[in-house]
Image 1 (tube, helix red, strand yellow):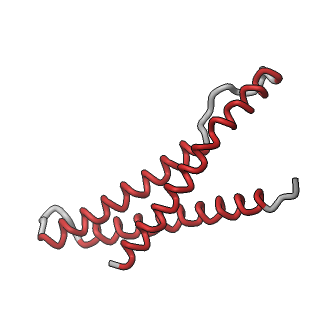
Image 2: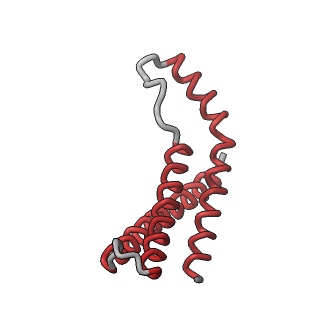
Image 3: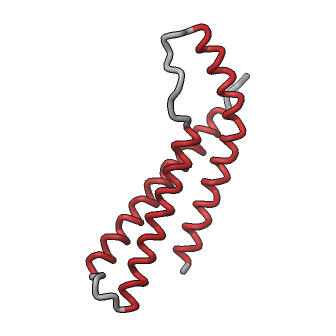
Length: 119
């Protein structure tokens, strides 16, 4: 149960960071708009960092839910769910969570580096 609480806490932190970066998307788009006017060769539409991060968090969340539902189905005795399915789903969930945690750590580290830069 403590693993689920830790996972939820980290996901909440990541959503908070995502929301904080979403506040800066307006400023970045203005700056990019000025750059696009100066450089017409630059691609005009591409994925935003906040969108990619949000998709990653949502994907990890769906993997977590899928793992939990597979485990519940096995515990209830569903004949279509094998213990190997439960273990594979659990490992996928664990790997996805570890990966997104590392991404979060790198984002926080980069944010701290930018904040400590002299102006």
